Length: 398
Image (cartoon, rainbow, N blue to C red; front, side, top):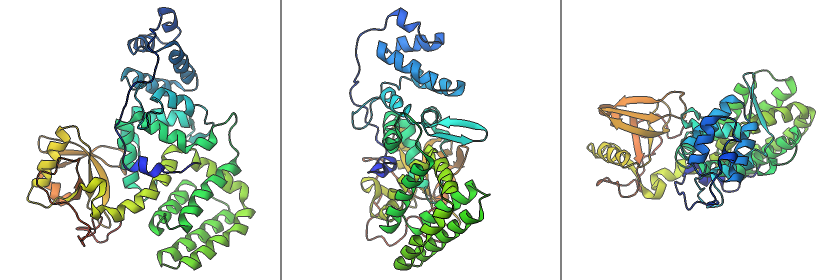
């Protein structure tokens, strides 16, 4: 699993589209008729797909079940397949073709979903993206925004994430375990992953695998002990505890490997695990002016609500930190209309709505696009109020 710099892409999604990198040769009616469904063929012609692109589209459809094909058709109709990524390295269709080479399959609820199918679904239905890990709300909010507004970049990031898994055959369970272990150990020892984030990982694993062998249970308990030592600031003792888990892991290697494959095959888990590298850092950076110093507390005489409304009306992205009983929580405000605020919540399956009158009561801070400050005072480095804990019982995130 390649994790180099992916957190930057997840945390702050780009909307850059760039020029179209495709042929201009028109598509003949004969080639158009090769598509299996007539509506799709018409849409392909309308989007001026080349012969090679039509072939790629057909190949992708063969890799997908009916609902996946419907999602792909939705992307085609929306004119998204030619959208370029932030690096201008390829368009959405090209990155989807790369993802077709990833053989990992997520098995859940009696259905199998390839990495390709998961990405296509995320792009067609970004509102379905949900937070897997506790304290990964910021990364998940970024994941949602990227899928919604930068589909090619989303596909590129996922393709890069699974770079080592692109081969002619499915990677072994053991190789997936090694990849996952590298991410966890490297970032735990270096301090990139906080104790709170690791506790969220352990909690998700326990929820995902409620019935494990005694040996795996012992391994998980040992890992939790190491995390608890980290939380107490005992770095050396924690490192020793993690090192001592090696022999326990060897005694249940096969079971752990299968568990790792289940986790790695889940695009949401993999993205949020890697986004967590930035997520924990961004929590501490927030009061320093996160997102180009565009963070503002909302309790500034109603000006924050007005600035947020204007930013949304102008098509801008507005992140907001909600107050919670124990911790703040990052969401994405989608719209303000008729006295109601609708927002995407990474921890909910449904769109959330509150009244504008409750704006300052429910939110700690907002992050606005440049030029949309409306006279608000920026959150500065010398501001001692924790952005994730303003009006809450703690300064952590959930």
